[in-house]
Image 1: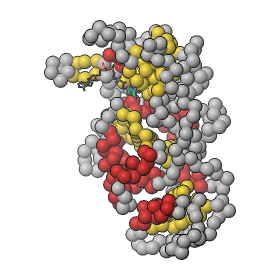
Image 2: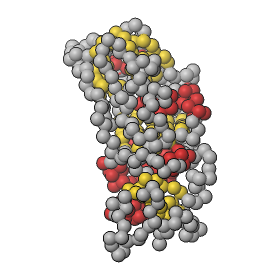
Image 3: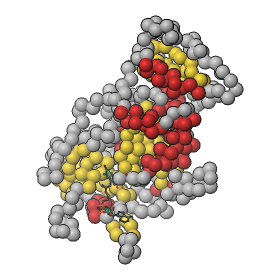
Length: 401
Ligand code: FAD
């Protein structure tokens, strides 16, 4: 039976054991219920063998409890290692004076549609920098626009619309295209007066003629010169918002320009601490990034600098399809990295303040689901059902295009 001592014991050679920290559990009402000693924090510790995790979670939830933390207590215990992402968890566990963790965070001050397509804000291009290094494929540019003189403001995880000049094949003005914002609300110049994007020039071979076709808006943006005017709408989007919880675990999965919102997240978490006294991130951020070649790793140097500065709070895992091999000898896609880390990801997702974000190419979700399904089934859970629950709790966020 679960012990309430807080001391985990192994129940068998192959059995991993976890300690759940639970709050709000109702005790003593029912004869078939366990009772647990309540700690000073008002929480109880429940020791659970791996095989019973899901059953136990359901039971806790029936008793009105909320799991605020899960710790592994076997050879992979986070207490013992120094560079695993659970170090983030570790730091969350210290100190009893924790703020209550919020699950479905209500975002009250999220601006939307300040500028509509009929009346866009006309800003100026301040800079355009190539992000693909020598030897990489394609063109991806980091663009920064001046917003001064207007009222456009936004939060991390939102997108803006860009209206390319000119008309389409039917002679109608071009429709807007959406782009994820790659800067924090303060902008790259920290003066709250700019917005930045990360834009890949769409380029493909026409399926019939074989001619190279370039995308309208992405080409316009990638060729934009500093000083040029730019018509901007929005902001829009509430799917990819970052929770206010400073102790959250934020798992990010990106392919290519899908990194844009995560650049904004990471800059907010780690680079702009002075600008955000009310958001001092202490949790764990784990970025999975997939691309074809090493020179296609966007913002690589800055990411690695952040990792050096915050080794306990930031983990970055690359999947470089044309250079790395998966365990079966095939190309290494992001889904293979998810599969490799699926147990850990599954465990992290048990914490009520873990959020997973997926951004980038349409189609990347399939592989991620496969990886998570495999992990879930090991724990006796059905991924489809579990994911539904995560979505309901606003902890599983997807924006693919
Ligand atoms: P268009 O000229 O509109 O051409 C696109 C069309 O070309 C497609 O509709 C399709 O018909 C055709 N096409 C495309 N590829 C092929 C192919 N391989 N074979 C045959 N036909 C093809 N993009 C970014 O670069 N960065 C971002 O951060 C970003 N964020 C986004 C966020 C959201 C919420 C959404 C919805 C999209 C985002 N996009 C982003 C994509 C962006 O909105 C545009 O779709 C993209 O730049 C292409 O627009 P375009 O005008 O250049 O292409």
